[in-house]
Image 1 (cartoon, rainbow, N blue to C red):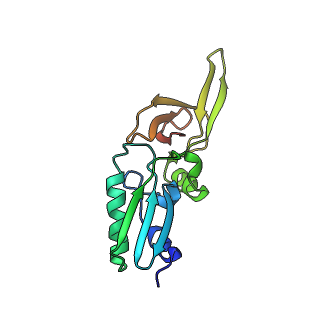
Image 2: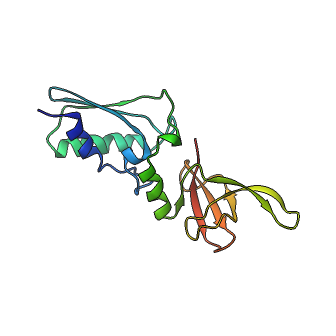
Image 3: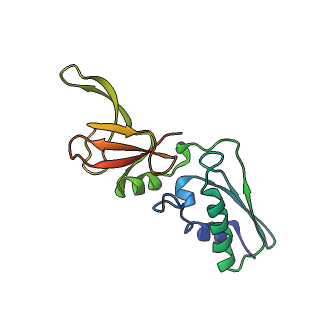
Length: 162
């Protein structure tokens, strides 16, 4: 008999197509798994409504479960409550940082020298400096913004808090 825990073990290997260092569990979009006999129901919440990755995530979920013999799979998408970066796991935040992406929630208020004023900074995932600047609110995906470190001069993505 299939259990929700067995299904979750398989889903722990399904990665986000836009940020492939994170699983859907790390990201927090995997909301629930239930099993009724051989019928498996997986509930997911997109990072935002209209997220283009959701079609691929649903297909990857169905494919991963089919590869383990579960063919009677229903993937439900729920929009409420809305996904938040607070649902991202600590392990997911660590993985982002290790792969050069500043995790959400690390926005810092900075006072810059010589009258340059205050600004918000994000810790650079390359060198750890908080002397950073946002280059654009729009990064390689809708969930990320492009930043640059003033210390090491490296550009990096910042996963925006939602």
